[in-house]
Structures are given as structure tokens and as C-alpha cells.
Length: 179
Image (cartoon, rainbow, N blue to C red):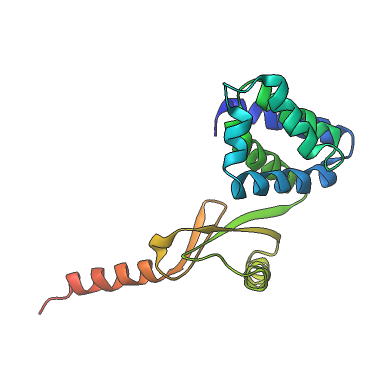
């Protein structure tokens, strides 16, 4: 994460915290993150140097006005104006991490070969909550290299139940076996 992303996210978070808006802004930022992730042409359009800044800001204003808090809209406009839209994902990660810290929530990621269904994410979240005794905010990251199973990552720890990990264990055991 860049210092730029930390600075922007911290400024927005501090403002939201001071005004009691963190609960409102977090889901709005998540929605924008999802929108940008699902529509990769949208960030390219908003960052296109050949399109005048006023038009890019107009597109952003039209898309988000009346859907997000003015602080979020202005934050996005600032990122576009300063050429830092590529930092948005890290800004969101930082904002969410500060929110989690202030609200006693453990951030975790389930790494799987395919996207998990919402019921499966809920089940994993509840199980991890039982193990840690904390409220869990669980994301799903897809990595086909895991082959199958799930790897849970949280607080710098990994619980690796992936097929790839199990195969590596078998390979290690076989290589250490003397015939």
C-alpha cells in the first residue's frame, strides 16, 4: 500500500469518524470498489488523459450523485482530479482496516479456486468467529492455483486447507521416506 493511499484513506476516515459517518460510508466505498472491479472500463474512462477532466468528473458525478454521501463523491472526484484513481482499492482497504480496528472486527480472507457462495462465506465466517472469539469480516479472493479447498488468512496467520497444500505435504513426506 502506498503512502498516498494511506494519506487519502486516513483523511476520509478521520472526517467520517469525527462526524459519525463511518457506518454509512464503508458500505458505499465497498459498493464503489465492487463497481470498479466489475467494470474495468469505468476506471480507464475516468483516468483517460484524452478526455477532459470536466467530462470525467461529470461522468463520476452523474454515476454517484444521490447514491453516495457527498464526502464519498468528493473523495472520488479528488482521486480522479489528482490522477490517483488507481489508488482507490488500497484506499478502501485502509479505510476498512481502520473501521475494523475501531469496531473490534477481525479482517480475514478466504482464498479459494472458485468464488464462494454467500451461504458458504457466512458459514466460514461463523466458524472463524468461534475460533477467534471476534466478529469477522470475511472476503473471498479467487486464486486458481489453490486447486481446491480453502486457505483462511487473518492477522498474519494462515489456516491452509487447500488441495495444493495437501499435495505439497504428501510430496514432502514421500521425498523424506527412505526405501
